[in-house]
Image 1 (cartoon, rainbow, N blue to C red):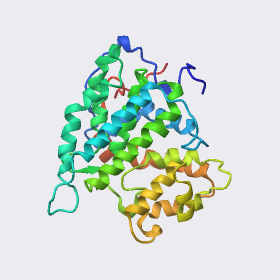
Image 2 (cartoon, rainbow, N blue to C red; image 1 turned 90 degrees about the vertical axis):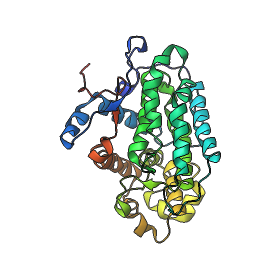
Image 3 (cartoon, helix red, strand yellow; image 1 turned 120 degrees about the vertical axis):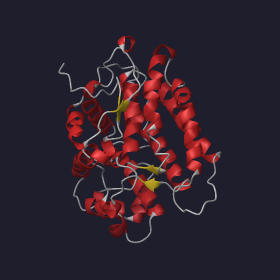
Image 4 (tube, rainbow, N blue to C red; image 1 turned 45 degrees about the vertical axis):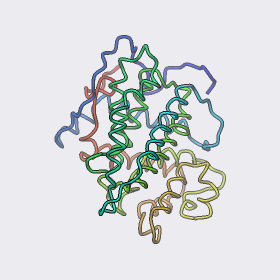
Amino acid sequence: MAEGERQSPPDSSEDIPPATQNFIIPKKEIHTVPDMGKWKRSQAYADYIGFILTLNEGVKGKKLTFEYKVSEAIEKLVTLLNTLDRWIDETPPVDQPSRFGNKAYRTWYAKLDEEAENLVATVVPTHLAAAVPEVAVYLKESVGNSTRIDYGTGHEAAFAAFLCCLCKIGVLRVDDQIAIVFKVFDRYLEVMRKLQKTYRMEPAGSQGVWGLDDFQFLPFIWGSSQLIDHPYLEPRHFVDEKAVNENHKDYMFLECILFITEMKTGPFAEHSNQLWNISAVPSWSKVNQGLIRMYKAECLEKFPVIQHFKFGSLLPIHPVTSC
């Protein structure tokens, strides 16, 4: 997309004039299973899924090494994530009897909890300073749970919501789409993998071998979109070690597969049965469509995930308003 090009983006990503916006601290609204209907009818759901699908379209057929515009806001977000990474180095795991859930994670998280608004303020221009407390909540929710020392797709969704909010207040723009996935989200994944490894975090609500992945979902969606119409890589190739090793730096999907094979032992078909089944699907576009359906069903329509989602003025619980 041409630099500086301004269009009204699909799915109302930045259609609220910030000057008239009353920002509020997001809070939980989905308290019981029947409340899930409110979520699925909400403006938040429509905007969130619209954001995911817009990015899915934006990265279609493109490698991670593809040349794209990198705005100042994108650079600032990467710097923010680099800070979180540095704090991991400064907070080594402690000796403890339990193998999983290293308590040093709580020290790391307390630092983020304290500094989140200051970090977000480095990304948001001063005339939008009123939005910082609302947006910072999603950043704090995106790195795992400090009580349980676990991480899962609900935390990943909070990071996507954080980015969606930055689009809605105009900090991120339409021509940042590719960089949002390839530069910011990819860096976020690296930091989350480091957290998971360093502090031996538990998977939140893992379905074991029957889930797609212990920790992530979105990089499989966007990563499969990257591979649509690839001249020679087919879904069957991602279970081939050689194909993964040769191409993982270009494709988010293969980066995910590489991380799984580093973290798990034994036959792939046994430890990652769902992915093994997906490798039999004939085309990447069918994989992509199937994963979007699965994401809605397994993540966005599951009460244990959505009960933790927070709603504010940017991602509101009220029903979709027709334009």
